[in-house]
Length: 442
Image 1: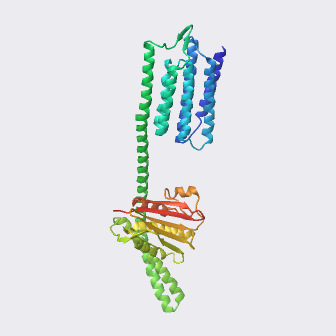
Image 2 (image 1 turned 45 degrees about the horizontal axis):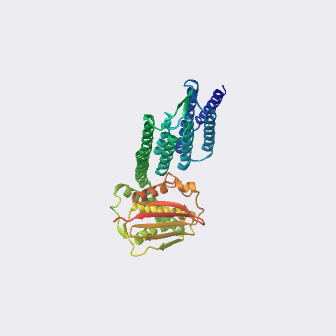
């Protein structure tokens, strides 16, 4: 009866572990470990049932104490893993491999005390290999293949045979059953390496395809948002054109009236207002042009230095008091590019953001080689938190805490559509460093 009590206690332990697992909500890597722990709990329950059936129905003589020690140790390890699952932020591939390795050692130990390779459940060693082939990188897959093959090989030669009554159910040195076991060993090893090669390869292909699909979905979603923003911008340009025109006419008439009265200060202020109205109308015209012409139709073929000078000249209209330092460090003749309205607006937006937080210092570095152009814009502002830097350009988020962050979002999308990339990083001392990489079209 003592053996039955031990088995029942282990079964209660297993039920408590299953209950704890059912109450968790985790991320994908952690979810894989959760499923592994659930599978391990099912495996332990199956082994307990098999032990009960073998002892009380098949009348097999089994070493209960070693088996109980193995199962209890395995459940203790599972509870420890469950504790780590709650405390850890994520599960690494190495950590998951260690979990599978523990399962292989535990199952090998149980099979050693229950007939070794003659045990009909010895093929369960393929389960950890199948899981590794599906979820882990190639290095871990092949290590698991070697481990499971070595474990099965050891069980062919070293094990405690099953005993039913006074009859030992072992493998004789010669005879058909010995040949059958050797054949099972060959089949197991071949199955292990086939899983490691073909299943792992297919799983890797599926992961790459899913990653590519995810990237394409993100780009489609971003393009849809950009189209919606372009439509909204065109509508706003159309709606704002009339009131701006009216304001321009009224401002001009007021200026003439004030000049006749001799009020020069007010007349000068109206002149500034007129200039700002003209600038607003130019911006609206630019928005309409971007949304109605093809990307390169209105562009000019310029050297990168000339193009940047034009961008800076346009930017300085609104940033006359900003201290901008320009550094040209490219070697050889400056490459040419097609001036693009969208790219110009993107660069001006980055320069505007730098000028807002650091009007006393903005540095623009221009570099190039035979394949690409690199632009670096740096400021001496307060910098940003790492979480914010990661999210910049991924969603509507302002880089300086003001506004909606649409400019940064469109800037990143514009540069990526041209085949380049943009990265925001905090400078070692203070401020933010924006690195823009644009490939040359040959």
